Image (tube, rainbow, N blue to C red; front, side, top):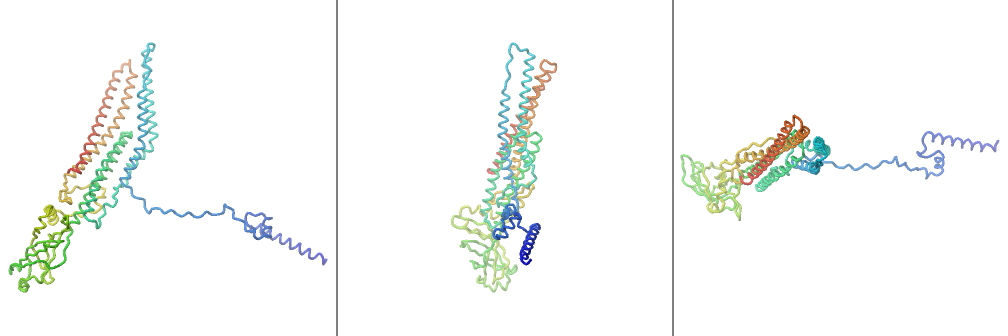
Length: 503
């Protein structure tokens, strides 16, 4: 009994240990992916207990987020035009292929009648041959429409878009501390852009006219296209006006010299009006030379106190920000208003400026003086336009203005330019419309021909043949009108471009 006790204790302990391990394994405490035997072995070799995590349970690293632009770049008319041109050009190879295949079909001829073929059988064979040719052409047209439908629909949806397509201004509308020369440079760039874009738009007009749209599609497309075109060109024209106004706004600014001692003399005193005659000049100044004479209001007591001396007098002059530039220096003649001070107190002053003779003898001074007089007198006044004037969706209001070089910005010029461009656009639109008519009438002519061919030796042959002849006349009329409209569009377009350079 004593010898068996250890054996029983060992058995009980071993059984308890096995039951405990089984319980733990059954409860899911063993590492995942191990069998029960493997788990027991892992207890004997703890280093092996760290089973690898199955590959499927490892999470991939989070990708670094790619920064996205805060807003989508605004579409411009230039990108719109690029897209339409690209889409139109992608269809052209199919049009060329279609025309080539149609030409091959039209050049097909039937076998001539031989001496053994009856007239009726010959006519029947010819009619069947022509019908088969027409069917081939119809099949080619259908194949073309199927191939180009997606692109054609894209063109129509792009042109029909309601998105406001502003020109690519490239910062040209901003008003900043730029010198007037920069505004004039922008104006010249806008003038060049108007010419370039009018030419390019006309080329894309021609592309659209070759895309075999139906008559109704062509009419809708033309209206939408021309509306966008005219708005775009009018915005560029308004931007030119804006640059002109920016220049005038800068030139019309009133600047003033500091108070300082200048050459000055007092004339007679009028006690009734309490006025002193005064003459003063700073004609030797290398910045604001002037020569002024007039009257100053001063009380009798102060007038007596001066003893006709100018020791306690100082002066300053107002001048416009429109310099007279020579090859050696830049001058701002003081020609706006004079200010006279006695012991620091400004006195009411009236009078006028005279020419500084050595300055007036310089070349181009007269031209400068005429323009300066317009700024000073108020004949040339800024309209105080801003960028919204150019960006507006409204058609431009043509107003009388004067350009920065003193020449008139005539209403008639603007009217002529817009009219010629509008007539050019209308000519292109009508040409495209007639191009659709040519295709429609040509198809009708083919149908009339088939009707006449089948009606030979029948009572209504003359009637069918007459209808065929009339259909030929309609095709020729449409072709002539199409040519005329395209020529007219080119003439008016050239005239519109000419107004930019020669008016």
